[in-house]
Amino acid sequence: MRGAVLTLHSITSQYVPLTSLSTIRRTQGLPIVTMGSIELPYMQTNPKIIFFTDFDGTITLADSNDFLTDNLGYGREKRRQGNYDVLHGKASFRDAFRDMLDSVKTPFDKCIEILQENMKLDPHFIEFYYWAEENNVPIVVLSSGMKPIISALFESLLGHKPRSHLHIVSNDVESRDGKDINTVGGWKIKYHDDSHFGHDKSLEIKPYAALPEDKRPTLLYAGDGVSDLSAAAETDLLFAKKGHDLVTYCEREGMPFTTFESWETILDTTKDILSGKVSLKKVAEEGLKKVHEQGN
Image 1 (cartoon, one colour):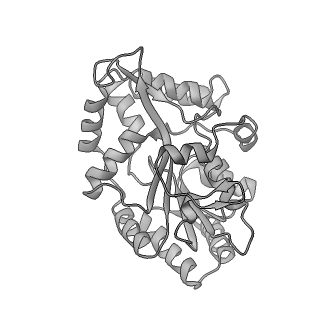
Image 2: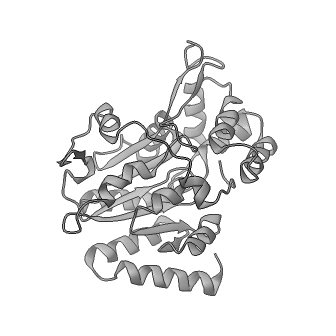
Image 3: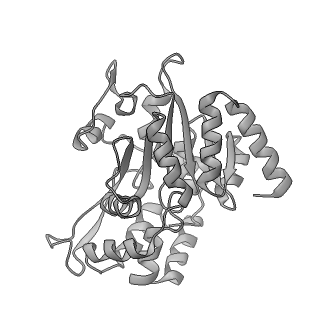
């Protein structure tokens, strides 16, 4: 769901206490490293960088949820009206997003098949994926989408199930009124938490951001929507997709960022950061300079 713009204050002020990180990770069967009472699964391999990222429109070239709604649900015009309502405070992102997905009555397994036929990864993400595996850089996908769809798309587009260095934290799917999800009208989105967006992405990052400086890895984030702001605020550098409102908001909020058009840029920059060739400050300064010279 793109184009729904909120202020940073409205995003960060509406979160409430939610399911603990440890509970979430246990359900995924991931190894866990602890520091005091905090469990840190992405520290298992003692990485120098952890790369957090949005999925739809960031890793993929198009938004899978928008595709379902536009082609199988109530259509593009009504979806855009929902975006407008969120923008002007007439509806919450959580309610508008549920409403648009509720309009999709196609059986869930068929939805996955259709998306597998139509969605594409940024071709340079695949290169980044293998480089990250070889260089001990965990990739953590933080998404407002549904995990079965994300997992299926990764499996079909990568050609194998995601390897252990890639983690998915997202919303899920559940039965509607006890129906089989693979029947007409049988499924609905199951939100990750009780936040305004249905998934407060910052919760996954905060325990790592709070680590002592001598133990804390560099935290990077890639995204394209304003809903990524709360997560990006917990990291050291944001890769904001060129041409999206997120760039404007980063400038306004004084967040360190650089822009990208494809994962080729992200890969090159992350390599330089890992090797020590460039500093985070220099990347952010050059990113801001480029935006001012070229426009976002």
